[in-house]
Length: 358
View: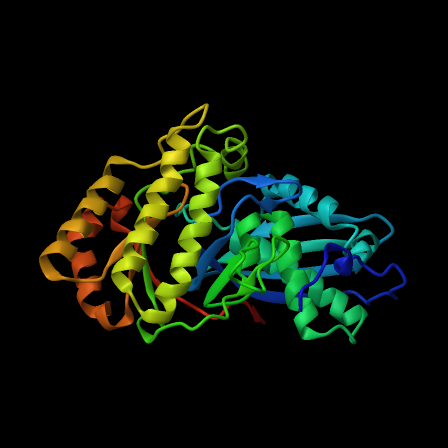
């Protein structure tokens, strides 16, 4: 069922909850067709599709206390993290109309990641989606008649207002965000499961994340998206994303994995090319990123493997491969690619089914 923005507006007539807490675990995701460029209130300039990950996740407990003055504190791995609080404050201000009850409570937000905080893996998608799910769970306690479908879509809608890609972390294994003419349930407001046929070759797809650079990103995603305004190639890029998603619909159905590789790798390089041709411009790849890409291409040519890569807006490399190649590709990674990783670190992951209530 398609929801409009007004459908998510909150009910101000809710009662009150006794002090309590709710907990959710939500995963990160890796985009195959990239979202880059936004308008309005966290709305995408082009549609995207992602694999929801399984092992890289955030666990969040939201404790709430009846209070005349709304406030919150954030703890990461048990330690107060005041640097996160301005972003949470902005998030709460954006979502107040949709969950107006938050003004009546003070909160303690306790969060932990299954991956090292300094690993260079963006935790905004998993973190914001977990927090959104906690808030919707509060609303469900206030109004038990809310349907599960509504709660799922509202959590994705709220997560988007915290971090755009977070709206793709609620469900899995393939999630679409952004309107696309060939995907009837697609929406700019929230992520939706990809309902097309998916060939068995894409089932239980593997993703090993190579941690090339664990430092803070050179440019924030917010700034990066803003650079698409007035970008010389923006219009062509948005059109390309639509076309690539159209092609992936057929690829998923037919199992045309060679075409999958071409689209996914091209999308990754296009994302970085948009940053390299913006004003100001950025190069987020590192020398070892390129070494890994060349090693993957060489290995694929020599062995006929269907391994490929994709990139987020940073230096780390996501190595994607079918489940049936798991043993061989992971051996290749251990022998040939770990030397390009910071401190030899990498994380094995795979496509998962989305968030879990704890």
